[in-house]
Length: 363
Image (cartoon, rainbow, N blue to C red; front, side, top):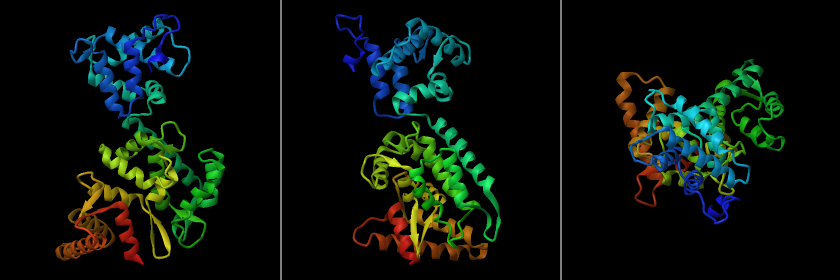
């Protein structure tokens, strides 16, 4: 880092120490929030908890020039960065008191599209707000494609899978060589082999794909560990701990290359039942919802609550039969966990174990 930051006209080898701090912060492993807090703290020279215009200007100059030096492109003029800082300061200072608190600083980072693109191109991070925005935009795009080809059939509102695939390729949403993998996923719900996918099944796949797209900030079709953590946070609606992230990343990374592609992710959500494959993103979200402690596993009671919700939504359980139904589901949950963990003393179930239990139970 220090060699890369040595200025061409700085013959004594002196490095701008704040450029080095800024670059190390941006390139370090950590969440977007951790990095913005670190940057704020570095340039809050008087430790007042606020940044004045001079401190913000130093932030812009150090980050802008340091990052450009690291990737060996011409750094912007210091005067240009000073002008940009002054312009942004006015936008960020919502209460117009000529100083920025951390909330104003991070809100601007989190919502300004230009700074998001600039920061994410170097740091490997996007904010969860930006990920949600990308998720919604892509989900809408997918649903519009389905609606374009949909019609009423004997299985409800459905669309021809070949037509959908053709549109995906025409719109360059997938590479032609990836078509076979995606087509295989779209055909999972096509039980009658009619070359059709119904509305609910497509929406289920679209939500999973959009979740992946929302956190694949550089659009390379795979997630590194930082992007994957954003994916989990997006689907869990809470920040997962690092142990959970590393556990699920290892389970999904079937080719062992250290990255998760969208097909590994979707296969992770797929389970086998009878002679068919099933894909159920909504069921995985229910599993995560009942995983109250965020450990990646559910206890007997959590499993009971999950199964009862599924049972209640499938069958119309009257209030008079609710207590009996709860007893049956609780017994079933206990039996599943006992069967899965018969060789140890664990009383919890991972997603993989839950999928396997569903597979065995339907066979």
